[in-house]
Image 1 (cartoon, rainbow, N blue to C red):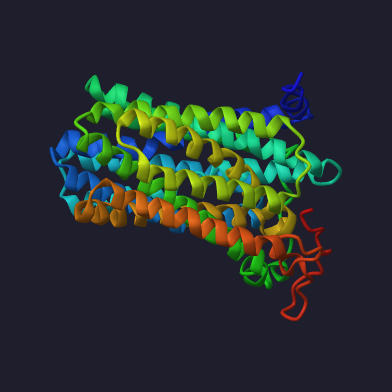
Image 2 (spheres, helix red, strand yellow; image 1 turned 45 degrees about the vertical axis):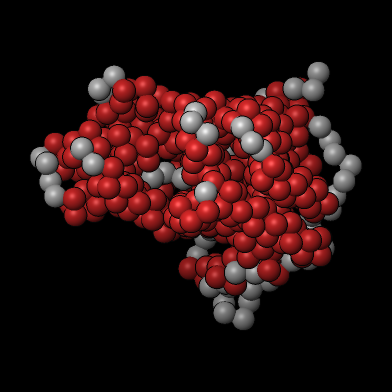
Length: 421
C-alpha cells in the first residue's frame, strides 16, 4: 500500500517517539498567536491592542527562533529544550498576570514579546532529527519525511486555531492560552527525553567560526527568498480571501474557503510523500511554482465565492509539496552543525513575509479592492517561479558553498555535501 512509506518511516527506531510529541506540540504553537488575540481582546475590548501584542509576539518569534536554534545546534536539543520551555512557561504566566491586572498596553506588548521570543521551535527540531536519522544511509526517504512534516504542520494550523476559537467563543480565552502553552511545554519536555534521535551537539568554540559563512551562502539565501515569497503569499491570501467574501456579501464563506484550501493541501501533501517522483528535485520545485503562479492568475477571473473556492483547491494543493522540498534542499546543502539554525531562519523569513504581506495587501485592497490583494499573491508566486529558475543551477551543483570547508577562521573541516539531484 502507498502509505507503507509513512509507516516504514515511523517504524524506524526512535522516529515515532520524537515525531508524535513534536506534532502534538505544534498544535500548541499554532494556537499561541490566536490565543493572544482572543485573550487581549477579551480583556481590553479592542482589536488594536490585540494587534499590537500579537505583532510584538510575531516579531519576537521571528528574531528569537534562529537564536534558540543556534543553542540547539551548539549544546544539543536535550540540554537546550528544558530551560527554554521553563522560560516560555514563565513568559506565558507573566502575560496572563499582566492581563489579569489590567496592565497598560505597553506592558502587554512586552509580555507578548517575551512569549514570542521563547516559543519552542518544535518544527525545526523535528526536521533536524529526521535529517540526522535518515541522512547516513536513507537520504532518499527525506522527501517523504518532510512531506509528513508538512502535513502535520498544516493539520496543526487547521486544528489549533479551531480549538482556540471554540474556547474563546465559549468565554474561556484564558483556557485557550493555558492549553496552548501546556501542549507546547509538555510535548517539548517529552521530546527532550528522546536522546537516541537527537542530533549530536557541535563541539568546541572553533566549530562556530564559520557559521555565518555556512548560513549566508547561495543556496540558503535562495531558499530564504522562496520562504519569504511563500510567506507573502500566505499573508496576502488570508486578507484577500476575507475581503473578497465580504465584498460579495458572504463573509461567512471565508472560513469554508480556507478549510477547502487546507484540505486540498493535506491531500496533495500525502500524495506527494507516498510517491517516488522521477523528476529532479529542482525541476519539481519549478513545476510547483509554475502551477502556483497559474493558480494566482486564475484568482483575477473568479466572480463568486464558489469560483474562488475552486481556485484555492489548486493553489492550496501546491503548498505542502513546496514546504516538503525546502527542508530537503536545506539538508542537502547545509552542514549538520548549523542545520537547525538554517531551518529556523527559513521559518523566520516566511513569518516576515506573512507579516509584511498583511499590511501590503490591506493597503492594496483599500485602494483597488480584493483584486489588489490578489495582485500581491500573484507577484509573490511569480517571484517564486523566478527563484526556482535560478535554483535549477544553484541547487544542482554537486558541491555547495554551504558545506565547503571552513578553515581560514579557525573552523573545522566539514566534508563537502552531495548536491540535490
